[in-house]
Length: 181
Image 1: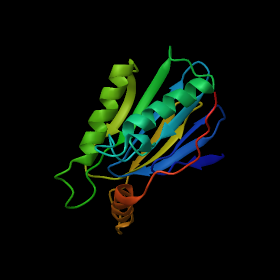
Image 2: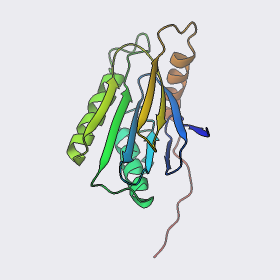
Image 3: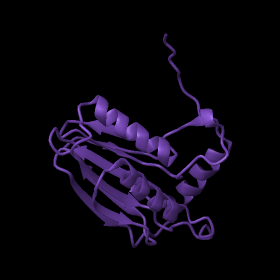
């Protein structure tokens, strides 16, 4: 089966019968699909909000923007807001020494509140805890496979989260903007 790996700050929408996968630590992924059309997608965000960052730096790395992008792209691809199914995962407390910021917990609370506000029921979730997770999502059927990575013998996930968080502080958001009148 074809598949797409979703990295932090990324998202993917499809109507094809493929698998979307990601690995989550304190990050959260929302898997949302239209049960009628089979159009579905997944995002992967690291922080619930941009904080004091430049408001022009809206990016899918922040929860509110990642959720809006996912919902808007689903609609553009034929999903209707009348029959969404949401499943959310992640928000673990996996980075040693980072418990004071509670990023994982804040991400988990954010995504549940966002979906409640949008009127989208959560069909399944696996949030918080101390373990990283590998997620495989099949948008055509809505099936999700979750593997908690209890026996990681290296610090790869923790190291990637630290590096990504550091880049968020110093890296400008870049990309193309198309203006039209």
